[in-house]
Amino acid sequence: MSQPLLQTKALKKYYKTPYGDLHAVDGVSLSINKGETLGVVGESGCGKSTLGRTVLRLIEPTSGEILYKGENIASYSSAKMRELSREVQIIFQDPFSSLNPRMTVSEIIAEPLKVHKVYKNSSDLDRKAFQLMNVVELSQRLVNTYPHELDGGRRQRIGIARALALDPEFIVCDEPVSALDVSVQAQILNLMMDLQEQMGLTYMFITHNLSVVKHISSEIMVMYMGVCVEKAPVKELFNNPQHPYTKALLNAIPVANLSYRKKKREILKGEVSSPINPELGCRFTARCPVVQERCSGIDLPLKEISPRHFVACTCFM
Image (cartoon, rainbow, N blue to C red; front, side, top):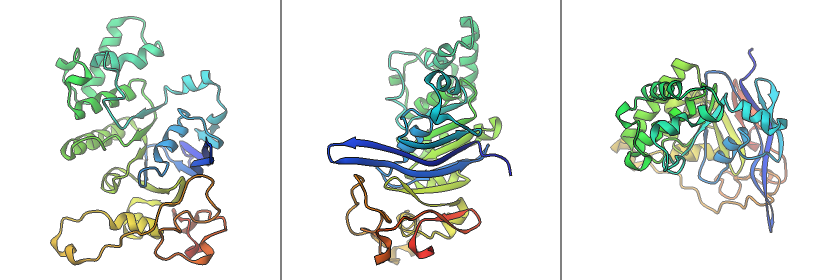
């Protein structure tokens, strides 16, 4: 079996607060093979975006390993990380706030090329910017426009073009379509899938929208309060969810079918536990409909219940 392009081992990111350590990411282990897409899902505040940024070391990890092509980049110096940024990039959630309002479209796209001194003269730089605009299907008449003059879909295309400027292999997509209209979402998703096929890209796709992640991912990881509770290939997860939280997420997806109106939905009750110094055991116990006494006080590692299907639940211990 080939070596995964990216792996994390027991990756943790804690934040100091006056009341103790806030466990934003707590012992997450994952692997992504070249050319595949790992979808990371969960409700707001579960640590998805923190995980994505920690993997790229935009946020420094508290502990754990980040293996890229077999090398632990968690120990890289800032100079080595700068060099590595040619191969790993990120597409941000809000296309407006992530673009410099004082720069034109071509300047924004060309900025990574300038920073890394890829081209020596401006004509080559402009040529590459035009090429990237064509790749993401942006009209060249927009070359001298500013971000505020464009709609959300075009702004996100600029963000994608900027991420592609250095020909990366791995891209973290941090909710890249959540701020867009549904019709524009479909256009951006199809563009990203086409680019993945043409350029052999590998994605970590972060979202809270299960319909989106089903469309683009090859494997899905479900997060809850900083930990991974279930991980499986996309079809397996949707057809055979095992963790109570995963079942609740899938049950919340709206279905455009009148026959489902009479179907009783399972609504989660209880309060979300505090992520500050959480107790040992399953963090979903306060809201779990099938909670047992043994769910608390013990470590719950992921267990493989079928090929490539992992669950962290006492039901499978």
